[in-house]
Length: 123
Image (cartoon, rainbow, N blue to C red; front, side):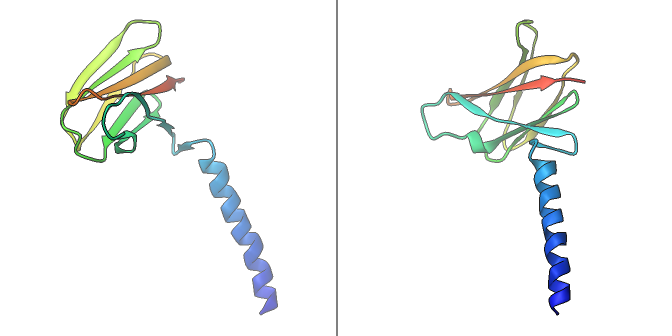
């Protein structure tokens, strides 16, 4: 029995280290998580209700709760180009980002609360 336990520990450590290595970069299968921050919030913060990620040139947004109608703006930093969309929640939406560069995605809820996330399109 002792011989089996000695084999399990290195296997378990190897598995644990591979998970830490893969997920430590905040990226999994090409998707990079975008941290959502509060810009102007008067009520209960809802940052955990908005999940955004970038994979190549595709920005994916998922709303985990019913936040009402949400206006979404994706703007290239310093370029003045922007995409707008309004969507009901809970729902999800994808944006195709044509050019590489730095971007800000802004979420304005129907109650006036504003959230944002910053991301890069690199390839």
